[in-house]
Image (cartoon, rainbow, N blue to C red):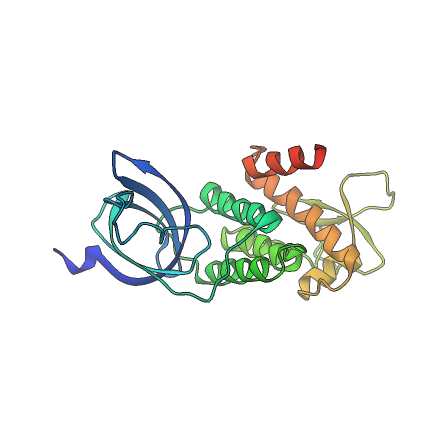
Length: 242
């Protein structure tokens, strides 16, 4: 077998898996050095398979695979440990992260910085399941948009490139940037310059900044998704109604 068609010891997380034929799984994995990859895990559903119980979402793994084409063959999986399981609300947030990657990240496109951000937010979710790792989640969403090529400008206005000022009030035009408005009723949603500048500094200590960051990321990701609703977001809304 050609060496270029084999990958060994790739740091990765499982994003999703589903049954394939009688005893196998199709696995969507997110790897640090190879991006999102599709893998067939042959025999993984057999009772005594070494892969059974390893291919779980959010568990840090080392994966080996071979083959070409759209879906490769999984050869080996090793759990790296040190990662508590996600529970409660944190588990649902984790599925939201995975759905974003499945929807937006093309296959075979490596994003090491995004992989690092994903690992960080999963760790924060495991350690603080009640708070949901909100700041890490916002960082991940922002990194995702930047890695996909959507330059999220936070420090300069879209028109004229003037510096954003803390006292200003801004609408945000997707793929362009913030536009200052004089009237709070002029557009929706609106963001303070203070919050935008805090995001640019990666400073989410203020609760209002965290709230506005959530609104901005929802606004920009909704545009990037072309208005398509996320399944996990619908589940969130249904839980809130209950």
